[in-house]
Length: 198
Image (cartoon, rainbow, N blue to C red; front, side, top):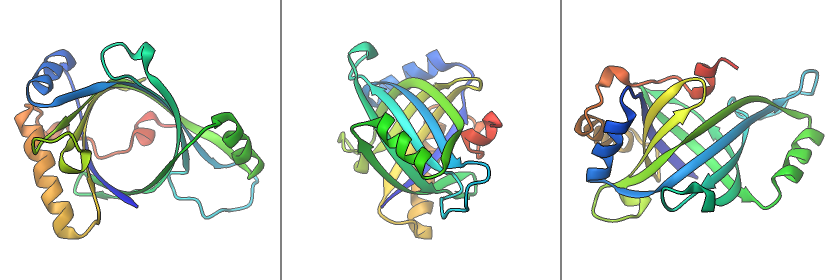
């Protein structure tokens, strides 16, 4: 199970921030992510689903500035989410399905319905340690979240959520936020689904 340790912050000047990120990180491509969060339908029997539901993400990822030639995938995710001192520490399970519509039919048969939706488009980079391996670096995303605005997301994948692991990751994430000139009072600890009020 991957442990995501991440921080996100509101962005006021996305173009100048993008230039600062380009100067220090390796650009990996554009993305377009459309998420639907599935929960038990009204009147359905209670299930042991995580509080965040089951996320079905239809994702288009390009390897450059032209996303039209990107690769389309459908990823299924469920997480146990936690916020520790404005840093998200999420236990994540994720897999890809070849037939997203068929998987959604299965969710419907199981008594689930899409309750919340999120759409974000943007750019991604890897920063740190002189390699392109996500495990060795920090994933950086600059995204326009529909109905909310621009955010920067910084994420480290860890193999555990021990206090010292989270503390070291938090230190690295905040140091990168500082390097990029993002004030710490711009950090947003609420989940996007909370901000969208769905």
